[in-house]
Image (cartoon, rainbow, N blue to C red; front, side, top):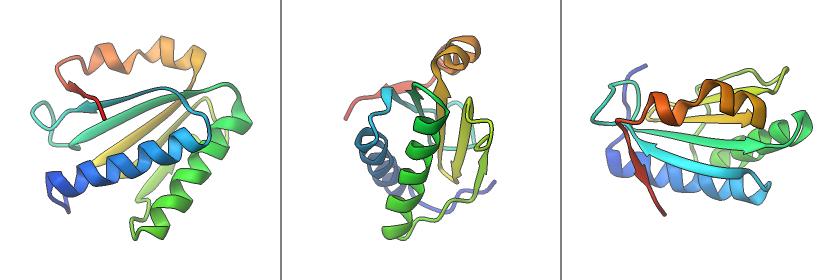
Length: 119
């Protein structure tokens, strides 16, 4: 999972992802800068949806919007069950949860050493 872009590129990708999440009414969108905590990525974006169909629609919209800007998804996990969808854009990792699993996994607490980014 190597880095392929600059931190500024990753921030621009994160902004595009947030727009796509917002278009499909994702809730409680949080962006964490984890660049000083992990080499895995620069940013984690965490969002919630209300049901399987919405989570999949949110994921599909992110893929479509980012593809149009030339950023293709490296990998997606959890799409079929859609209680936690993980999307890998190299330096930006997107987590789309149903509300129950977001509370259970509590990534904001686990990655609390990361700094929340407000756009």
